[in-house]
Amino acid sequence: MKSEVPSKSLEWSNLVLGAGFIYAAYMFGELPVAAWNAGITGTLMVCCSAAALTRYGAWAEWSNLLLGCWAAVAPFLLGFGSEPAAMWTHVLLGLCVAAIAAMQLFASRQTHKPSSTKLSGLGE
Image 1 (spheres, rainbow, N blue to C red):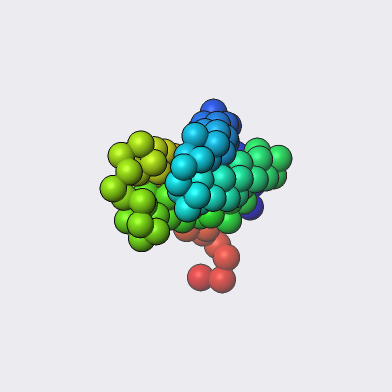
Image 2 (tube, rainbow, N blue to C red):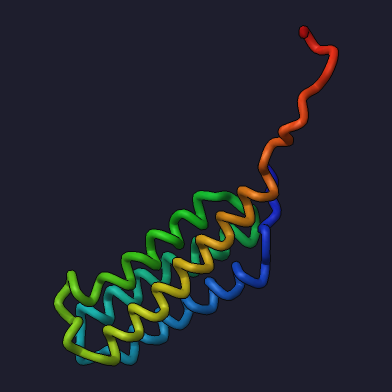
C-alpha cells in the first residue's frame, strides 16, 4: 500500500470543507442540533483529512465519504430540514466532501491496480 495521497489538493479541500462545518456550527447557535452536528462532523472530517495528509489510508477516504453522506441527510433525520441555511449548508458541504472522497478512492484504486500481464516461465 502506498502511503502517498493520490491528490493532496483534494485532501486539503476536504480539510477546508471540514473546517467550514466547524465554522458553521457557530453560525447555527439558535439551532443546537444543527450546531452540534456541524461541529462534530466537521471535526471528524478535519481529523480524517489531516491523518490522510500525513499517511494516506483508504480508511480516511471511506470515513470522509460516510461523513459527507451523513451530513447531507442529517438535516432530514435530525429535524432541522425546515431551516434553509442549516439544511443547505449541510447538504452542499456534505455532498462536496463525499464527492471528493469518492474521487480520492477512485484515484487510489487506479494507482494500485495490479498489472494484468502474465509472467511467463513461472510454473506453466
